[in-house]
Length: 385
Image 1: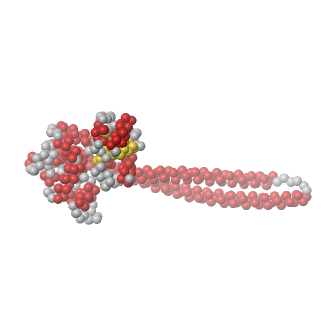
Image 2 (image 1 turned 90 degrees about the horizontal axis):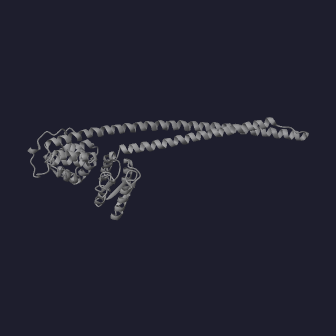
Image 3 (image 1 turned 30 degrees about the vertical axis):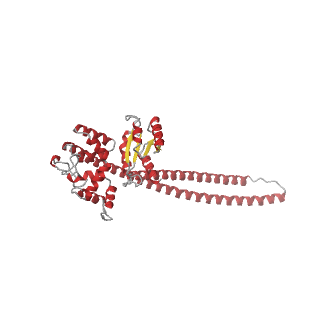
């Protein structure tokens, strides 16, 4: 958060607005513009707004500078503030309706906790900051929680960066080790070739000597045994077989290390891609609604963040654990695509979703697992299709 962000202090009853139920962004007197812009919009949203409003920004403009510009713009009623307010209203209309129906602080806090636990922080925070009937006490509580969440996200990013650094170091060590092994392998092969060449020369000399001796003995018509020659040939052949075995063992070790390096590269690539997820929504997925059926409760908030990055709207049904399974039919009509992790959903829910998608002509994509990486890869395949 920027320097304009601090805890609300001013009573909202002193704010006057033509809208009796809602506060405009420029109506805020408690300087919550910064967390609202930072939490409820992505940096790509702000870049898109500059293009839509035909604003000129420097090529080397930092994300913080862009954020600060729009935070300042929302303090006054202007085209920038109106455009941001309209975008937020459209994106979080559902949350505004939900909170608009509640009146007591206890109900508001309860719904906030429910949406926060399901990863819908942006919409809930925007609704609570702009609805006029929300008390100052509730605004202060919600503001504090969002403020601390920003610190937790920073710590998480730092931990992921450390993991990537460790993986890079391991990859470098494996690359060096592979190079040393390959160098040793080449040297061993050269030594083997030299030994084989020397042994072949010895065998050739022994054969030549044997042929001379055979000729002499043949002329004398006296049989003669060449035990010494035979033993030397057998020894030479044994050394050649040992050299071949050593070469094969060295080649097997080299293949093993090459395989380990490839696996480590894949792990590093996966870690780097997860820690540097694209922070701009896909033009193809932007505005589309995606229903995710099943999955583990602890992963849902992370899965929604992944879908938000692609600019799509995330809806979730637990597959019948707590949500009624018949509710799937009601939700299907309002979504564009359904994703279902086959390893973490009931058989009945999966069949019901598949049949409903076929009936309504919706895209049904089964996922091999409920991981965040599998979901991201599925969204990338939809984008590139």
